[in-house]
Image (cartoon, rainbow, N blue to C red):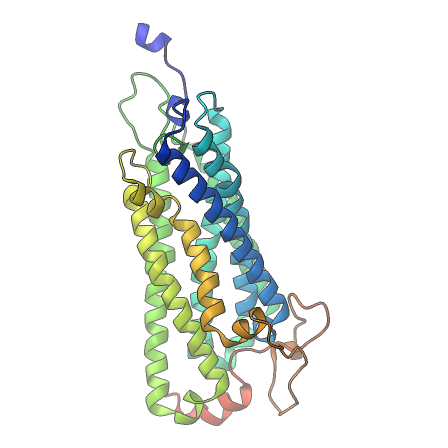
Length: 351
């Protein structure tokens, strides 16, 4: 009875009352990386708005993913990092829980958009003639809204299944499970584990499977249609696909680390950085890789003139023939990744 009378819900989420050197290092790094990741997401949106090739379904999904990243980065820069530095012993546990649900909601949306982007590249390579039909403006908005609604509904599961919450514990640099009673033997959240594992399987393994089939098609086109393989539009699709694969490999590594370490309370500082801050590392890597390895982005960021006028009419059909641009303030054509003229010329060689 004495043990029960001294039980305080959320004690696992409190700081130690003073900050150690490790606390300061992890806290300042988390705050800094969160701010950098936020800036990276803003840069993504600027690139999408100003570069013609991203006025497309691919750019729309990339923008949706960037918005999700941007909202999540706020929780790292303004909450996780500062509370780690402060190590207060009087934290309101419900604030910590709300912040966790806020961050996971947008992380889940980012996972969904990553899968959708892989599907977008799949269609661009496998079914170029049907690209504008499959990824019409209406369908793109439906996918984004559906993913957003699904993400927002995730916190409701913690109401349906009580005593499953987890939240950030500044003493452990990890998400920990606050026990609901002193005599409770379970020290983990089954629901949180299932959700993270589901996100890993769907977003990572599913994306890897889709990318593998896209790679097979690229190889097939390489050996059956030299003209199409060498077209500038198809080269751009391949480049975006390769960048996506590089991002997905890094994401799978981080997601696997999160799955193993994120709720453990005895990990090293390196393990904490990879498992907890690993998500914002992914966001930074996504932007950096796109800027460095994409010539259009590279020219824009490093000050060279980027053409924002429509190319001369060469008989090709652009996405703007039936849809308005997503982010341009003026009506400009949208590229589809593959010009219809090249598709028609080489459609007989697709097998």
